[in-house]
Amino acid sequence: MASRNRRFKTAIYEQFARLGKAISNPSRLELLDLLGQGPRTVEALAQEAGLGLANTSQHLKALREARLVEAEKNGQYVTYRLADEQVGRFFRSIQTLAEARLAEVGEITRRFLEARQGLQPVGREQLLAKVRDGAVTVLDVRPSEEFRTGHLPGALSVPLKELERRLSELPRDREIIAYCRGRYCVLALEAVELLQAQGFTAFRLEDGVQDWQARGYPVMVEERS
Image (cartoon, rainbow, N blue to C red; front, side):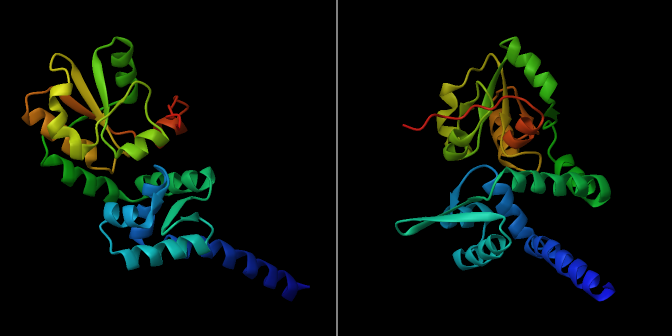
C-alpha cells in the first residue's frame, strides 16, 4: 500500500513539474506574456521577442507540450494562442509572486527607470477620474492587432512605430496617457519620451489590458468585419 501511494504521489508531482520545466526559460515567459495580448504567428512572436524563428519554434513547442499554448495552421503560417484564460492567470500569478518574494525585481525596475526622469506612472484611479472629466487622451501604443483583441474604453490605437508621423492627430491642449502591455513593457515609456520631447504633456499607465481586466474594469473588443 505504501509503495502504491508513493508511486501515485510521484506521478502527480511529475506532472506538476512539467509546468515548471516549460516556463523555466525567460524567453518562454516573454512569449506567454506576448500571447496574453492576443494570438500571434511564430514570425510575429520571433520579431517581438527578438528571437530567431527556429529558437522561437522550439520554445513554443515546449509550451505546447505542457498544454500552455495551442496552435492553428492557416496556409503556410502557424498562429499560437494561450490555451485558455487560466494560463493568463497563471502567468500573472508568477509575476505577482516574483514581485513579492524577489527584491531583485524591484531593484532592476528602479535602476531602469531612475535614468528616465519625468516618466512617473499614472495610477488607474487617477486615470479613471481624468477620463470621466474629459481631461485626457488615452493612447494604446501596442500593435493594432493587440488593440483589436482588447483595449481600454475610449483609447485610441496609435502603435508606437506610427506615433511620430501621427503626432498631428493628437491634441496639444490635453494630457496624453499612454499604455501598453503592463509595467514591464517599454512601448509606453518610449511613447511618453517621444511625446514629451515634442512638447506634449504625457504620462504612462503601468497597467496593461490584462491587469485592467483582472481588477474588474471593462475592456473593449473590436468587432470583426
